[in-house]
Structure formats: structure tokens, C-alpha cells
Image 1: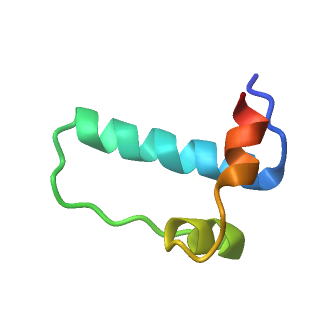
Image 2 (image 1 turned 90 degrees about the horizontal axis):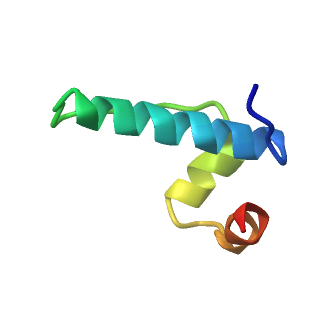
Amino acid sequence: MDQFLSSLHAEFTMLLSAMRSSLQLELTSMSFESDCHELVKLINGEEDWLWLQNGMN
């Protein structure tokens, strides 16, 4: 079982996994949605990723 630092970390990890899987299937056009407002803000560049980098080291 995976252990996550927070619910946001879990959301990020699952989104990254979905993106990697899509690339492995050679999908070139894809769209992802999330109801996690904080994750959307991170991806859109509205929040700092530093907390995530520190938590994953």
C-alpha cells in the first residue's frame, strides 16, 4: 500500500500515474480533471511547488 504525506500528495501522485500511463499507451491528446482545487492551482502555476519537493526528498 502506498503511503502519502497528505491528501494533496495522493492526488498529485495519482494524476502523475495517469499521465504516465497515457504516455505509455502513446496517447498524444489527453485531458485531465480534478476536483482538488489546490492541485489545479499548482498545475496552473498559481501556487509554489516547493512544499512538494521538500516532502518528497
